[in-house]
Image (cartoon, rainbow, N blue to C red; front, side, top):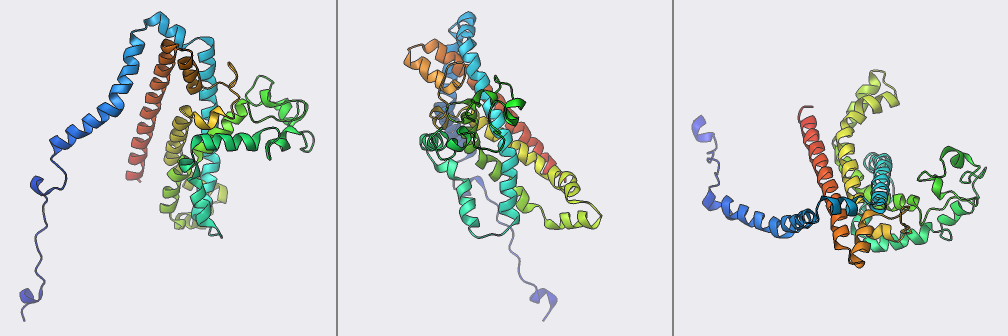
Length: 320
């Protein structure tokens, strides 16, 4: 039998034409996409800008940057930044444990990471308030000042490090640390809802990162710290930045889990989404629209930052 007869017959690759595609053509699909995005996203957002432009510059500035609104921006952005920063550290540790170590109940822990995604925000807010209130299971430990050396009292180590007007110094009382109904409680809530963003962003990168790289670094004489800072951390940096940006953007617009634990004191623990609701209840539609426009611009900036980070991340991994 000749070689030509023994060789299998190869069929030419199937080329998908426009007529053979399951979905409609490009023009029709694009039309449906633009119509869908326009009705659900673009038109409502454009309505906010249109309503804001009709207020006039003076009325817009008076509604969007009055002392109460400006204080809510500070609380919202500061608490969101601190919460996202905390999640970068502990989210990395959580993802590292889930990827690198086998232990009993690992699947349960991995599923619990996604709990803030599935849990209604109002339920999360009530649960956190009950837990961290001065008479709650966790909050009572801090509020009673029972820590060694009165750590969380004005004369303790934490009290001396943070001035009374700081975000944590304002939570310190003569008896101990008060978490609920302070800005510290807001940070706890925003940390709770932002953790999955960091873990789920870093976890796939850790799974793709081979352990042979660490062994090679150790064989060349690198210590554990040098291996992490010079080999592992540069690989994780793009995903950590993406997770931080996602957690920060999520925290800026959070309402349900914060409104219960914040205490909602004007100029102190009042977040911007809550202030919008308050102004709507007071029929101050101009003020609510002005604050909403500022928050919308902030969201656009955050979205642009996330896209830039993801673009840089894709180029970073493609050029490895």
